[in-house]
Every structure is written in structure tokens, then in C-alpha cells.
Amino acid sequence: MEALVALVPLLFMGGLMALVALLVWYSLQQAKKRREAMARFAASQGWTYRREDPSLARRFRGAPFGRGHGRRATNVLQGRHQGRATVAFDYQYKQRSGSGKNRRTSTYHFSVVATHLGVRMPELSVTPENAVGRFFGRIFDSDIQLESEDFNRAFTVKAPDRRFAYDVLHPTMMEMLLRRPDLGWRIEGDSLLMITSGSHTPPLVLDRLAAMDAIADAIPEFVWRQVRGQA
Image 1 (cartoon, rainbow, N blue to C red):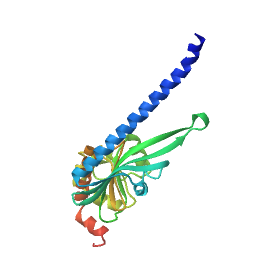
Image 2: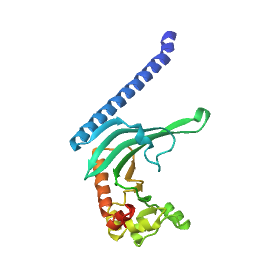
Image 3: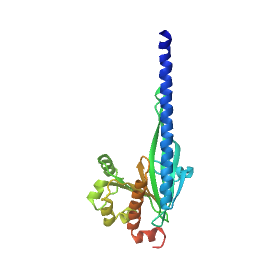
Image 4: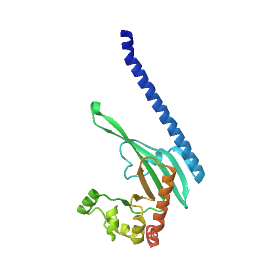
């Protein structure tokens, strides 16, 4: 009897280790299936698929890039969409918190979809608004206010060059964006980006690319001429 009692902890630990091994195996199998699905999707679009591209983890500057450690860009889809060079990838970084026995590491995951604009532009970000952000944005005059109060309530607009923001976010553009108040985007350098929490899926990538094409197409011609130095 005593021998049986002594075996209980060992059996428990063995069962626990087997469960952990099973969970690891299942996670690896799911990741493999996802990579294969992404490769098939890329082929169907005439794009290329890469399991990982370290250079993309350093490609952009704004949040969530540059945070934490263990930054990775994986499941990379690259090609052309509506004539524009595009790239989509899963991005992750890790961050430590706490200390001693309470020290832990959290991993944050994002889907990044970017389309190349062909020319460097001033920075501009348009993100879904919230009450707290709106309050502080107006207090510190950091949230650019446009002609449409509906748009101002729906989005936070930030840009070092306010004239550029006014030119890009004309009434027709604002009306179009109000149909998708859930979407945030930004112009950084020569790229237009949409970043979403979690991992990307083929429908999400195509949805974001369609939205970014519409945004790029709605930028007035005189703005393109100005950034190209043709004005």
C-alpha cells in the first residue's frame, strides 16, 4: 500500500509531462497546417511565401515595432496587388514583467499588411477613436480635427504636417472611411500599413489590401504631384 501511495506523485508527474508533450505536438501540427495553407494561398494569388523574414521585423518604426525583444516576422506573403507591391506577415514580440518568482514573459501577436506607395510621404495615422483618446487629444491639441464631426468622433488623426492630413482626408475620403470605422491605418515612409491584433488569415489579408487600395486611389492627384516634387 505504501509503495502504491509513493507511486501516485510519479504517475501524476508522468501524466502531466505526457499532456504537455501532447499539447506541444498539437501546437506544432497546427502551425505546420497553417504554413501549408498560407503557402497555397500565396500560390493562388501569384505571390511568394516565406516562413520567416528577419528584415521585416526591423522594416517599420511605429508601434508595435521596436518594442520588447524576440521580434519576429513570420508567415510572409509577398507579391503585387492591383499593381502595387505588397507584403503581409505575422509579427510578434515578447515582453518581460514582474520580478523574482513573479517574473513572466508575455508574447504579443499582430497581423501586418503593407502596400508600397512608390514614393515617400509625410507620416499620417488614422485610428479608431475612443472617448479617453478623444478627451486627451483635444486637451493637448494632438488629435487633428477635420470638417466632419462624425469623422472626428470615429477616428483619431495624427500627423506632423497638418496640411498633408487635411489634403489627404478630404470629404470623399472621410465618407469612405466612415463606412469602415473599425479600420486603422497609417502612412510610414513609402508604405501604407494596416496592423491588427492576432494572426492574419487569407480573407483578412485580402480585405485589408482592398481597403488600402481604395485609400491610395482616393488620395488626390495634386498630393501625389507634391510628394513627387512635381507641383
